[in-house]
Amino acid sequence: MGKKIQLIDRVKLGLAVSIAKSVTFLVRSLRLGAASVLPGSIARRIEPRLLQLLSQQVKNGVILIAGTNGKTTTALLLCTILERAGYKIAHNSTGANLENGLATALIENTSLLGALNVDYAILEVDENIVPKVLKPLQPKIIICLNLFRDQLDRYGEVDTISKKWTKVISTLPETTVVIPNADDPTLSYLGQQLNQKVLFFGLNEPEHYLESIPHAVDSIYCPRCGHSLDYQGVYLSHLGDFTCPSCGFSKSKPSLESSEWSQILVGLYNKYNTLAAATAAKELGVEEGKIRETINNFQAAFGRAEDLVIDGKKVRILLSKNPVGTNETIRVVTQSQDTTTLMVLNDRTPDGTDVSWIWDVDTEKLVERGGTLVVSGDRVYDMALRLRYSEKSIDSKINLIVEEDLKKAINIALKHTPKNETLHILPTYSAMLEVREVLTGRKIL
Image 1 (tube, one colour):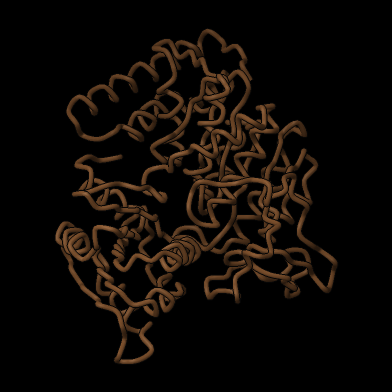
Image 2 (cartoon, rainbow, N blue to C red):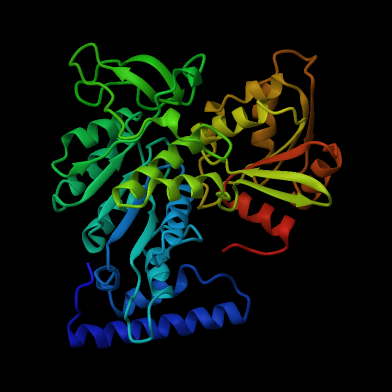
C-alpha cells in the first residue's frame, strides 16, 4: 500500500497511462462510448504489470468485491459511504469488472506520469478472474457476496469457483480481511478454512424465510462432507440457516445483527448487499451513524432497482440475469400491486449464450398474478414459450404480448401501464443497457 515505484517502472507506467488517457479522450470526444475497457487493454499491453504498479500506490489498500449477484450495488454503496466519510476513491463504476476494466478504472485516477493518489480502490471483480487478480491487487479487504449458477457456458459449477477462491485467498497475507456471506454454505465454509481475519455477514430474520426451496437452488449439500444440509429456512436460493446432520458443519455467525439494519433498496437480496457494505465500512473505522445515514439515502446503481420517470409514468429496472436473481426480481414484482411487466431476454456474451436457465426460474408466480406481460429481446420466443408453459390452464389471466422490436415493446408496455402504477422491466445485462439507452437516450458503456 502506497509503495514507491522504481524509476524505470515509473517511466514505462507513465507511457502506458499517457497513451491510455489519450485513447479515453478520443473515444469520449467522438462519442464512441464510455471508454471503460479499451484504455486498460492498451495500457496493459505496454505495461503488463500495470494492475500491480497502480494498486500498490493506493494509500489504504484495495477493496475487492466478488460474487455472482450484487457486486455493482455493494461496490457503489461502500464507495458512497467512504466518500461521505471524506476518503478519495477509485472505483470501476461502469461495472467493467474484468482485468482491462479494472485497469481502466485505476488509470482514470492516475496522473499522466502514472501517479495514483487515492485512499481506497473499490473494485468489483467478475468471479471467474478472482484467482488471476488477487496477487497483483493484494487487496486489503475481500467481500465474497454469493455464488450462484451464472453463465455455465463460461464458468462451470459453483464448487469449482469456490475451490479456486479458497486456494488463492489462503496465500494472501494474514492481515487481509475476508468478508464472506454466512448464509451461503460454500462461502461460509470458505471463511471457516482461512487463517486471515474473517468477518461474516448474513440474515437472522426467520420471518423472511421462503415458503419452500425454489427451483433455482445450487448448493444444498455440505461443502465439508457432501451430505444433504438441514435447513431451518431459506431466504433465497440456497442462502439460509443450515446445519449438516452428518459432520456438524453449520452457518457462521454474522458480525452484524441484520434486523438492526434498515435498507432503502427493494428486495431481500439488497439486504445482503447492505450488510456486506456496512460490515466492510465498520471494519475500516467509519462511524456507524455515517454508515446508516448513507444507507438510508442511497440511490440504486443503474439497472439495479433503478427508478425512472418516463412520459409521466414510473419505471423500475430490475436486472435479471440468472435464475436466483430473476426469482428475486419476480418476488419484488409480485409483492407490488402493479399489473404490467416487461421481460427482455438476450443471449449475448455479457449475458451468457445459454438461456436454458430460464426454465429454472419460477415464472409460474408471475403468471399466476395475471396482468400484462410483454416480452422482447434476442430470445423473445424462448421467453414467451417459458411463460406459456407456466400457465396452469387455457383460462390464464395473463395478457401475453410478444414483440421482437425492443423500442416497440417498451412503448407497448408503457401504454398498458396505468398512470398510478409502475412498469417493472426485467432485462438481462446487455438488454438492460439497451433498455436504458432507449429510455434515457444515452449509453452507459
